[in-house]
Length: 151
Image (cartoon, rainbow, N blue to C red; front, side, top):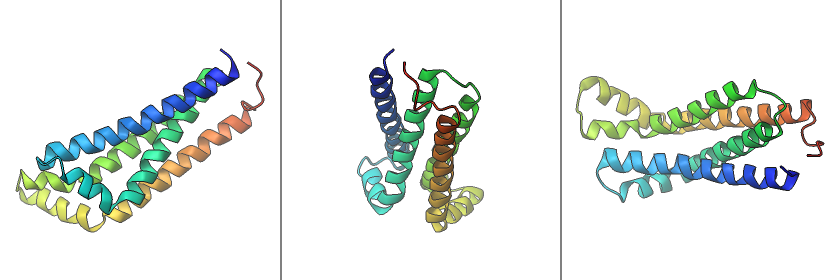
């Protein structure tokens, strides 16, 4: 595989990652709220956080694909999986307060209030973890000099 093919596939994988996370967000919110307009309204309220989260997730996937394609290290699989899980879990936690629209159980109602009140903080923490995952991936690329390889 040539370097340009690896880079092109890495960019494609990143774009698929963005589309995947955004799809999960919109499908989950549509399912929970029962209204397909609601996810768009919710997204507009937190567009900068969610946009950053989507982009960071896609960037991590693209970097992971690049490293995997160059095939210099295998320890990165666990880190990317963990960071991907954090991004997805935080995105779900962001929307979880909508579950109380269907299940008015005291525990979920309390969780709903908590999640709604601290939604920005939860998203900020997710973006920080996402950023740390990206930095880690870049450090692996630098450490193993994967940017210099002639393939």
